[in-house]
Image (cartoon, each protein chain N blue to C red):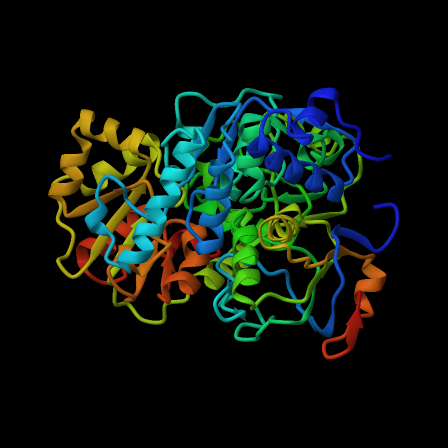
Amino acid sequence: MADFPHFLCPGQAEGLVLRLDEPLSLWGGLDATTGRIIDQHHPQVGMSVSGTMLVMPSGRGSSSASAVLLEAIRCGTAPAAIIMEHPDAIVALGAIVAAELYDVALPVVVVSPQTLATYITGDSLSL
Amino acid sequence: MPLRLTAEDQQLLDGGSGPGAQMAMRIVVRLAEALEAEQLLTISGAHVDSCLYHGPSTLAFAERLLALGASVKVPTTLNVSSLDLLHPDLFTGDPKEAEQSRLLTECYKGLGGQPTWTCAPYQLDERPGFGQHVAWAESNAIVFANSVLGARTDRYGDFIDICAAITGRAPAAGLHLQENRRARRVFDVSGLPSALLDSDWLFPVLGALVGATTGVQVPVVTGVPGGQPEHRLKSLGAAAASSGGIGMFHMVGSTPEAPTLSEALGGVDPLSTMQVSLTDLNQARASLSTATGLSLSSVCLGTPHYSLDEFAVLVPLLSGRQVHPSVNFLVSTGRGIYHELQLRGWLSTLEAAGVTVVVDTCTYLSPALTGGTGPAMTDSAKWAYYAPSNLGVEVTLASTAECVNSAINGVVTVDESLWANG
C-alpha cells in the first residue's frame, strides 16, 4: 500500500472505537439481525459492533462475509466504519454493494500497523 | 499507477452491453480500485457463492442484476444453497425463508449459472487447469483451486463472483499475481509420529493449526511424504481457510507450485518456521472439540462435500452395520456425486445402515437440517469450527472411523492412541 489510510470503500463516519483482539469472520461470526458477535471461538463473543468504528487486523474465513455485512447494513446493525491492517476484498465488497443497492457509504479503510495500534476501544474517532 | 481499462472494459462500464453488465462492471472496477489493481484480467470460469441466502438484501441484489438483463459470460458453477433441492422435505425451518432461498437459486439459474449446488466444484468433471485465471468464491474452493489445481483466483466473496462471471473480468491482484503466491510461513511436521503422518485424521487438525497460526500469509507445510491424495489436501485447506484467512497453501512434494521448499518460498527467507509438535496439534484439536460429555445426537460428514474417494472409505465402514436409532447420521455431497452413489449401489448401502445423504446444501447452515441442537460429531474441522455458532451445538471432532463407531454405539467413542506421546 502506498499511502495510509487507504479507502477500500469511501465514506465518512464517526463513533467509538471497538478494537477486536482477533480477526472476525462476519459469516458465522456476526448476527446481522442484532449486530452481535456470535463466533464462539472469538474472545469478544457477545459484544455488539453496531455503530462502532470497528478495528481489526484483517477479515477471516468464509467468503460469505460480504453478504453478512450487506445484510447488517440493511438491518441498521452494521459498524459505522471498518478499519483493518490488511486489505480484505471480501469485507470491502459488502460495503461496495451497499453503496450500489442502498446508497449507503460505509467506509472500509486500511491503515498501517503502527496507526492501527493507536486505536483503543472506547476512543472517539472520525474518518 | 491508476487502473487502466481496455476499450472493451470501458464499453461495458459505459453501458454498451446493457445496464446489467454495466452494474456488474461498476462493482468489478470499484473492487479493482480498492485493491489498487493496475488492470483487469480475463477469467475462464467462475464459481458463485452468492446463491446462498443470507437475507433480503442478497435476494434484492440478484433480482436487480436479473431485472437489468445481466447474464454470465463464462462457464459458471453454483455453490450450495440453504436447501436440499432434491429432497426439500429435509428442511424443517421457516417456510418463508425456504421460499426466499428457493427464489434466490432461481435468480442465479436465470443469470446463467449451472445448477451444480456444490461447495466442491473441483469434484465436477470440468475443472480449471494449471495457471488458468478463474473467479471462485467459497473459501475451501478458493484454497483448492490455487493450491491443488494451480489455477489462479483471489479470495472472492459474494457479489464479486457473479459480477466477474457477467463481465468475464477480474482485478489483476492478490493470488492472480505470482509474487503473492509464494509461501511466507513454514510449518515443519517432520517431528510427528509416522503413524500420524500416514493418517487422514492428521490433515483437518493440521489445517486448523496452520490457519490459526498463519493468519493471512501463504503457508507451506513440509515434512509430509510427497504425493498426498486430494482428499487430504482438501481437508487441510478447508480447515485452514476457516481458522485463518488464507486463499492458498503449499505442501512440499504434493502441491504443484511446491516441488521443493525453496521453490515454494520463491527463494526468499520465510517470516517464520514452526516445528509442529504433537502438543500443538492436540491443542488445535481440543479447541475444535467443544463437547463435554459422551452423548451424541448427530453425526455430520461432508463439509466440504464428500468426494467419491471419501465415500469409498465410508461405505465399507458402514456396510452391514446399523446406526443407533437415537443418532441422526448425515453426509453432505453434490448431486453429481449423489448420482454416482446411486449407480454404484453405495447409496442403498448407506441408507440401509440408516444414513441420510444430503445434497445441494450443507448441514452446518441450519438446525433445520440436523434436526435439533444435541451434541454432534464430525470429521471436518470446518464443520467443527462453524457449527457451534451456526447451530448452537456442541461438537466432537474425530476421525471418520470414530464418527462411524460412535454413531453405531450411540455414544461418543474415540481412540486417542494416535495422539499420545511415545
